[in-house]
Length: 167
Picture 1 (cartoon, rainbow, N blue to C red):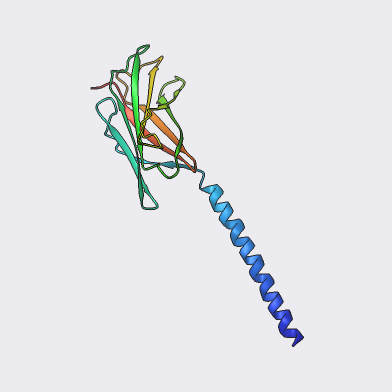
Picture 2 (tube, rainbow, N blue to C red):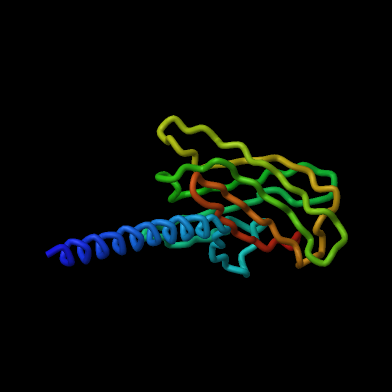
């Protein structure tokens, strides 16, 4: 009879150890989920020619980041960039940062923090806007990208939009 209780205690101990391992493994997976999630982008779309969108479906929910640049981009001239982010209501948006890069140039990327456009009906802003000036313009270049990094309360979502000055 004593043997039966020892066996039951041993099995209980194995179950407790297994459950703690599973919990540790779950925590490990949560830490690994902090990586950047890249959204799919139509590589033919140009934000200087209209609205371009990148999207992903995550856990059955659609998330979308759209960008548009309404003015011509020339060196030392200001222009406005609009970002629209939808599908982030449940996790919130902490920041939107866009980095403008010329891939085959020795020019430092130009990074811009965007400000939310307040809307009285929305808790999580969908519209983000920034006005900026680039020191070097992408005129005639086709290797320029606008890299949008949207940081939510859980993850970082990234979309890389190609752009050039051809209208």
